[in-house]
Length: 135
Figure 1 (tube, rainbow, N blue to C red):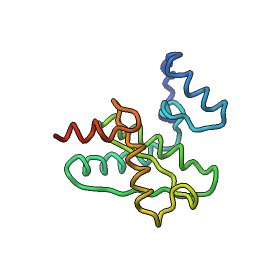
Figure 2: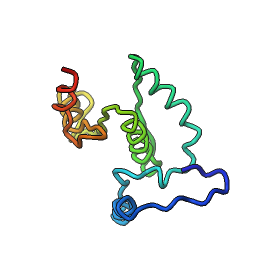
Figure 3: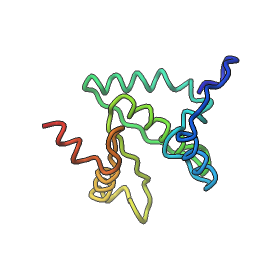
Figure 4: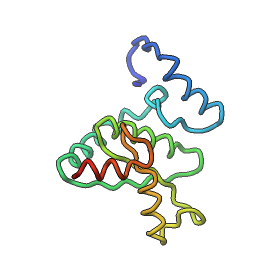
């Protein structure tokens, strides 16, 4: 959703609206529907789309997001995940932490990535369908 222009917002179905509102009531970032809430991210769209184009052409890109508590890291990464899945990519979101996913224990990081791999068609864990599609 762009913050520019004077367009009247489109109606959002109850089925799409409900999970977003439920997550917000719990104080959590919604798993989907973030485009309904996104403001101020328009400035990143061209650069991120160019990087996704590069990946679709066989290149690679790595993004790490860091910031203070409450600065919007989870919102941004989930918003980017939605954009990425709409382009038929597989994505995985993990949070590095000392206790659950320490960065120095790469086998744990890898396991979390494979457990949380998802596509627009397959919820976690989508590893098997992704590998099957390659063959």
